[in-house]
Length: 177
Image 1 (cartoon, one colour):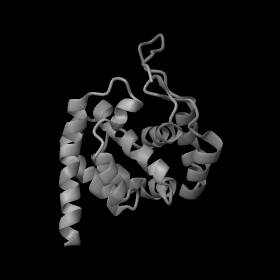
Image 2: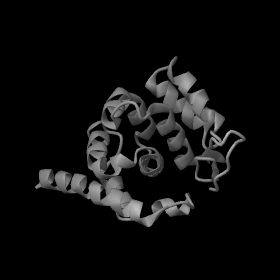
Image 3: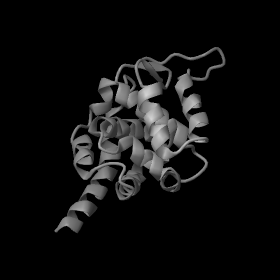
């Protein structure tokens, strides 16, 4: 992905995000998840002004952007959108993997103060059956996962967010003992 801006300095936003927001307001979580995956798709998606060729990451970015803003806590917004998030991620490891990358990118780009609290975000996503422990562990183990899709990737950010995520994984593993 490369960053390009519009004339007013704003990053180009994929029109599928506004389409998803409109659709979400009129349909159930299951219908919206189906619409995202079958009608909107993620092919050649614009993610933060650059072209993204990973369809799952692009669709997950559309979902994250449509569901979350900086006005409320992320955990409360996850609660508000848990049915939709779970419907999109249910039985779809590829989408869940893209969702974890989209969440990482969202935190790094939009909610930097949330990097140190990412364990609480992962706990809420796990409690709401949005992501599995196994996929969080895989994501956690690959610090440069975002680099493949996002050239402005900063390794220090990836390390910091995974340090916080490690607290969640410790909590889950302590509960398994």
